Length: 254
Image (cartoon, rainbow, N blue to C red; front, side, top):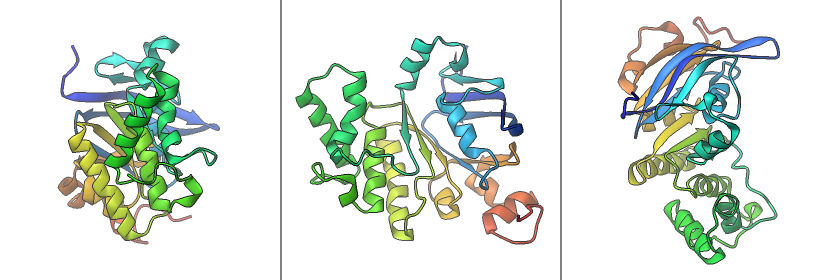
């Protein structure tokens, strides 16, 4: 029987890409309602781990359980139904430039529901209001700042009232003040909407601002997992070098 407090459980996840082992026997549990941050350097597997959890990539070995159900054992149709319970906030926001902000947020609702155009518009505007973009419904993405595009992408991620939202580098390319705004949104939405939030980032300020728990992935392996304080006070030299951004240490700079 599934543990009701665990949203996602990963067992022995292994993945090769281009002949290289990108994920190496990773096992972890993500608790319902928490903000779980996956950190690590570029090319060490954190984004691949995220894509495996969403079902976008199929692992070579291992299991992924969502609410106790084996995601990989489901039929294609059942897997797609489950994936509708996920929201995804992309690094680039991935908005369609030829659609207005409201139309971008409406896309998942148009594709996956039979709601009327009027109801979809109301929902899209509600989601935009939640991320502080009321009044910008008829703007196009190229008329928005980088931070506003990120927020619009987040509004689209929550359009279908997901249980879990995945964030891929949500503060990449933003200045420190806008980073703080996006981080606060993640905190607020996770609490208000009772979400489980899984965030991939290498922004250390964001990591220690939002995380309930943190996992560090290094060379495809789970290097360490723990609370903010556990990671901050870790005795692991690889973890300490990464969070402090030091040149000297076991992480080789190439």
